[in-house]
Length: 232
Length: 360
Image (cartoon, rainbow over all chains, first blue to last red; front, top):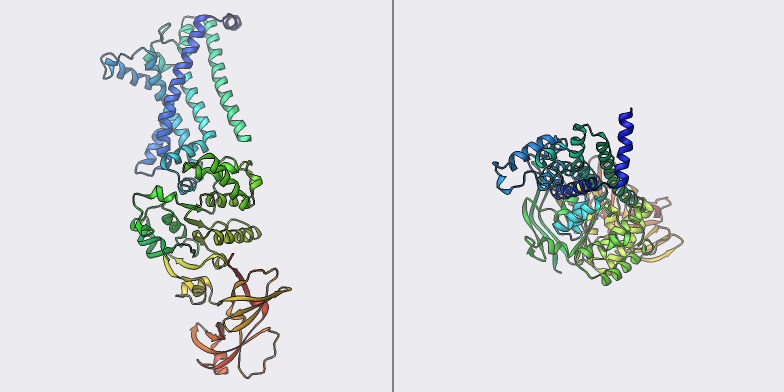
């Protein structure tokens, strides 16, 4: 038990003193996963809206693929992105492997199916007559899309939470395409793995606490917005 | 009169089946055309095609005589629709009514003025700041009406707007809609499965069944002479005639119908004109000179002008200055020796007369 208690005590000491490395890693996690969330929202909402509103052959298959993608193993995504970005790979000349950009790409691919799936569900829960009603009121196609997204804003917040949660907590892909380079591509999850492997449990615990706090804070903000809207 | 909206050889399919097949339909400028028909007749599809929300598989839609193709968005912005479900957005009542104006880029100041005016017109000015999620069915449908009329459209399409409302609310809203339509003179297509609603509002009625327009014409004409059995079954074979109110006191209304006078019981009746409706089973026929003892207030003299078999019974039309339809057994007809040209007396109680007010 000493191991645990010492670890926790040391962790709070690190958090209390504001270790520079720790804050840098935290900030990088936030930036990388935040960017990935934004990209996944752009991709996921576009695809989600098409799947929710258009009727085309193979639509059911497409929705099934999206649902499968919601459980995509990060390691597999990491492997695919690593192969593409590898120096001798098809996108090698871009020189992105072992950069934060590579991690953003991988995390976007992990979060996008989740955002897509939540978008399909959110838009699917709107009344079927709403779109014709908006067109009848004189909406263009873009105006209609903008209005239905606003109308589904509460369930869409769930998509943001799920997307950010998946991006910030995955470790496999970030390790493979980022390489966990100190000062460059080290983020909270990869740093936890490294510390634990070395037997340095105190920093691992400290970083884990920060990771949990980060996810908690983001969800707290979004949930507060959601609840306040719902009550108004 | 100019035509506002027309359908030419329009066919809409759902899978293998034809949902709508309308070779020819014109909506005249300034008229209220009621589309009457049972559920599943294709009424909503017709509204969607007219509102340019659904493109037919075949045929074309004309707006003021010109094909709409390629101009759908611009033309949709000259129209407005009210559906059975109000489908309000999760915003305030004011923001909902303002929505169509925002989509058209109407400046904020003008928007506010028009929204205020139309909220007041439908008696919901006090709800402007209320969330649209907290409204009764009647209030929500008032918002939906205000949201459509605030656009000051050249055509308004109403798809069973009151069918989800309770009877008293429906009556009130029907009266308000009638007066707004009369006031604005907006061309309107009013879809309903309620015969009385059609009779209350429409200049002309189109009866739709199985995706086809079975009959279209003046309201009185469609109701008094149905074109076929389907229409007859739907509008009800009965006497329908226009009447002018001469006197209305203590619930007793006296109307002049054709050359005759008809007395009816209708409390709180204030309109100056009405459709006089009478079910054939409520009409008692007797030979002109027969000594009839009954309590009927209406006793009209006329001649049999038509006899049509209807199963075990016959349907007789008696010309009493306006056509009165009666239904009697073949046996009674033979016993009375009725034939075309026989003078008869048609009697019916004042309580049997159903009055539908007309005009704003």
